[in-house]
Amino acid sequence: MSMLPRSPRVLALANQKGGVGKTTTAINLGTALAAIGERVLVIDLDPQGNASTGLGIERNRRNLSTYDVLSGDCSLGEAIQDTAVPRLWVAPSTMDLLGIELEIASRQDRAYRLRSAISGLARDIGRGMPEFTYVLVDCPPSLNLLTINALSASHSILVPLQCEFFALEGLSQLLSTVEQVKASLNPELNIHGIVLTMYDSRNNLSAQVVEDVRETMGDAVYETVIPRNVRVSEAPSYGKPALLYDLKCAGSQAYLRLASEIIQRERNLRTVAA
Ligand code: ADP
Ligand code: MG
Image (cartoon, rainbow, N blue to C red; front, side, top):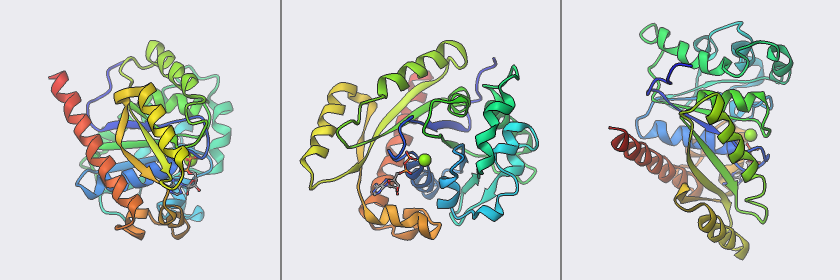
């Protein structure tokens, strides 16, 4: 397996638990990165298609989807669509993606389908294809072949954890999957960070969870904590990222801070590597 190209940086948003903020983070972190000048592609790898919906791509506009990409019917470039956010694009998903696992199960390259598709983007640069600086992959709530495809294709994994009592439950399973992928499919994979989501300042439990997770996971946890914010949860029903729906709300502001923190971490990684 050849090295991943350095650019675009590919980050997988993964946690096999549902409802922890993966999709919300893909949409809003993507928007925040675009707002500060990055060229961002969100790849929707969840058959639910919530990232696509939240970025304004209605179901009847998903002629080509990540299903078609993974099954080899089209290139990733062909599936990409503009969004209302400048410098932000999305490769949408449909329910068809539910069948992909069976369809590619017997293929030798089944874990590398997404990686090949992302590598293929380089061929289209200059032919109308933007040169993305970040790719965010929104994973399904499962450690299935789709998530394995995302981890095989990524430089780093970014793990959203909800500020609730069982926040750390399942994390060890996720981390051991990361280790397995590193050992076999993608030695370059690292953990970019853990982002605590849906923090409720009126609830003592939230503060306790933040403290516990920081104690257990140390520097892996981002400084930025995403607050529970009704504007953030309303935005997808308008097909908009929170940052377009209400830039001033606490949730949007937190995602902007997270974006700066991520770029800072990338710079530090580069300094270490140089
Ligand atoms: P996942 O992709 O991990 O399943 P989602 O991003 O879809 O999780 O979030 C689960 C639910 O929680 C959604 O209804 C979403 O709108 C809501 N949610 C996520 N983050 C926030 C937040 N910061 N404030 C309020 N609601 C949120
Ligand atoms: Mg999701």
